[in-house]
Length: 390
Ligand code: FES
Ligand SMILES: [Fe+2]
Image 1 (cartoon, rainbow, N blue to C red):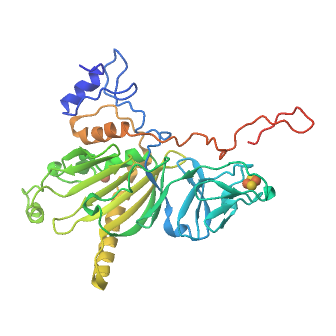
Image 2 (cartoon, rainbow, N blue to C red):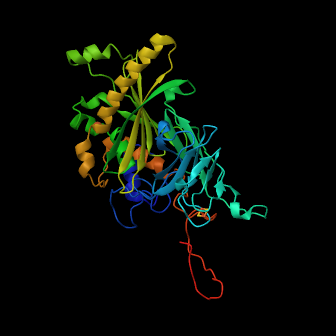
Image 3 (cartoon, rainbow, N blue to C red):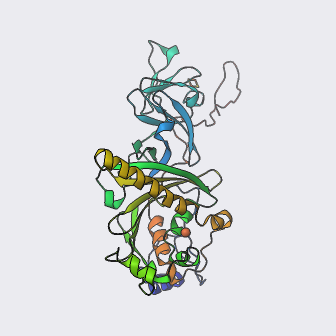
């Protein structure tokens, strides 16, 4: 029997495997019986899970342009070189800390405005004009892996991406068309926004769906990815239900694929036509959610295929808008505190448990290459004065 008696008893009762977790995970204080879910990652704004996060729309970073961006509390200088590729560097110059977005793009490199040091896309300093012809110290600023897809620029919050960019499971490996839909803000953590879409109870209470229509099953796919599938069928006790049921051979299609606790895809619709959405979320400075919704569909050929896809994408974007703006009232005022989980929360609990085991990024650490100003002791000529470059 696990030491986390109170929690584990609940977990077994919910048919969720007991997690022999690290301290602070799902464990009540010794000797105390309680049901609150204690976490170290879930709903913690400072915990950044290693993964892909949306940075900007592709069109917001033109060729030869550098823009200042702030992601998860970190300042970045993001630019598109002559080769069309987007590079993301820590914002502050390794020399004196000038913001590199004040500089300019030169070929595929970025030149600091202040003393004109030049940085390559991998962060290496490749030119210090005043040292022309002399040995140049090995200096760099931190660079972050980027990728572009679905009309968006994405950043991986680690050294080397462990995953490809997330895809809708049904569209995996297929060429697809995307529509960048609305950007939104919610006054709660992205984890809380994501659990809303797997919260069976609220579909009945808020969206007035029949109680048994959604029964979510959690299927972990990898360290970073968990899928939720609906097992519920359209109830046929009423005429509308009987009509709808004709379009579903099995359960009502409602499948979600969650990555890093901050990105989710949703597939829904009758058997003959599935619509696909992506919600890319990140924590803003005040702990709220900055979200971007995308509509996706497989590529269709020819002018008719183009037209069909436009209609599908705009229709999906409307559905995305409903998802994004629905429940707004709750998200404006909620102080999330999961004190009393019940069996109907099992999908939410599975999400939290999966998230708690995902690797964290060393995102807030100071870069030892000098990307961030840090205090130093420096002897000024002819004095014993202490100074700093911060
Ligand atoms: S601060 Fe960038 S070159 Fe001096
Ligand atoms: Fe909702």
